[in-house]
Image (cartoon, protein in one colour):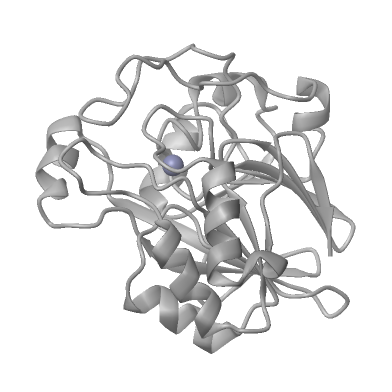
Length: 260
Ligand SMILES: [Zn+2]
């Protein structure tokens, strides 16, 4: 498989000769205001430009949207992705929203597995907040707290787990134990609210995950592209060296491809 880091959580994954675009946020740098109630209110989103052409980004066989927050499916992506593209959604509500936006080939990913050609995709749970207090903020902003991950399986490929936007909790540990993925993509920017609660994995959470599947390799994405990220690539690299898992962690730059 090839994992091409585009920007934020947006990646192009070539798996069993099929190309998947994950979580497309395709606007130009600075197109959106910062997320309210979060760190770094002086930064607009996305905080960096796309590293490759739009033609390359949308030249895929399917799009997987782990959840419909702005930094995972934005108005620019809704506009630029062809309406007959195969779109995978995490639930019926989000599938309906995609259909309303004109997409005519939308399917909901299932926990028991969904086939795309001969690639099996399995929806996995995710919890997009670190404390119950965050729920009020979500409600106020009418943000969903529902997010998801996905596992890729094919007889000729290593198993791949995209964890999605989640904090570390029992269900993630369960997924790692149950599926024992060989490659794990983690959203590692530790984005957070200004009350100290956070929305995606911290460095310590990632370290916990590496202990659950000691043979797996990890790839860090969702870094250095949105205002509320609190961990940089350099910081994460240093931390992984300190803790002794640097040899199992790739932190691709935007535009970089990793092959497994
Ligand atoms: Zn996100």
